[in-house]
Image (cartoon, rainbow, N blue to C red; front, side, top):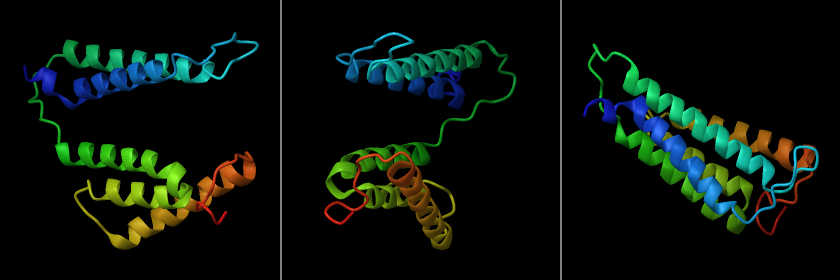
Length: 150
């Protein structure tokens, strides 16, 4: 029973669940072929890769000799990162990339054992600049940085 509560096994199950979720939400997208990829090709392939890695991780955690004591997962970091991702998804289209990133980094940082405001602000600034440069400037994606402003 303790092997089913190990961090590795639960991480594998989480990867499998996210992969299945991606397949479910992308079920109506056209796959296309390797030469002419449709909009669902990359999400499907990433979901399959994620599920495969999750399966390998879960099986390896069950098979490996557990002579050492398995420690139970720490729920605060897992919960706070998940809440941060959900808030990012909810805010991205309504408020824009910058506010969504700020909320994501702030909430996810609260899951750590140490919270240093200067480091969190530095992470927010670096992520905001990099994401703006990569997605808005470099790739020319039609996303709003701050909704209604830019």
